Length: 391
Ligand SMILES: [Zn+2]
Image (cartoon, rainbow, N blue to C red; front, side):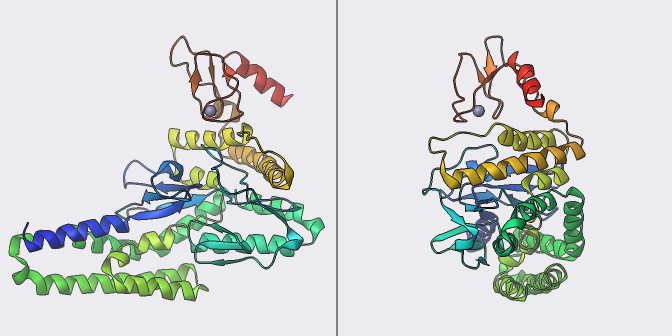
């Protein structure tokens, strides 16, 4: 390998690493490769640490990639719990003992970077700084609310998070205000990983370096300036965050090339995971995503330690979310009956299926192996169960 080959190889490796993002396990990465529309990737199954998975975030900024997360805590009029109300597609990860604090006992709730500090020794990680600020602001407003007003405030907050037309507007404003940044990042990436290396290979580094360096500085400088301007247009008041991110982009062209992703990654974090899926996904992917969200709320997993205020808070919030989700699906023309319709049996021996993860069973089973506490339904039983629920 010649020195120039080594240099180019190093640049590719470094850029590939730039395209890995550590996202919380309870989040989704919604992205599009440029053709074929958006798809949703569950961070739960990706390699990483117990708390975060390494998601490969879009290497080329054709359209914004969006990180969205279920509420990392649950809230009720009484207090706040470390148990989550939603576990779309997976059960609760085994972690520390569940925590619960009454609103009155909590100190001021604040965020720093992507972390929200709830009380001494209790913090949660969000998908980005904007997401953390949004969550901290919401929790702080509930903490300060009059006890009698909290029930209504939580319901209103969750309903606003399911406003699909507002989510569409927020996303399209972000894309419009970031369009020059997108072009700048795309040009910088293409120059950096394709055009630059190709020219250096053909012409030799000694002959081409002045032109390559000049072009690089031009594209890099423009990306940094455009990042700062786009950030100012979108998040006017967040000047400290803007300064930090502009500084990082100015320090390395690889970071500058990720500017569009940095700008919009947590753009939809004020909205529910369902809403983010409904406004970006299409066709069968949209229906499958909606089904996972609905099945999780309808058929939650049951653990062994289901008692106490921590558990009750999660159950209260899940019930509120279930009502809001069912309304949101109705407005999106996704019928609950069609979404939860039984899958076609994989073969004639299959007797029952899990209504949550749709695994199929040959032997009668008390509980699905993947979803603790969820009883598989026989094909004939499905209609009866639906009838009882609607009675
Ligand atoms: Zn299951």
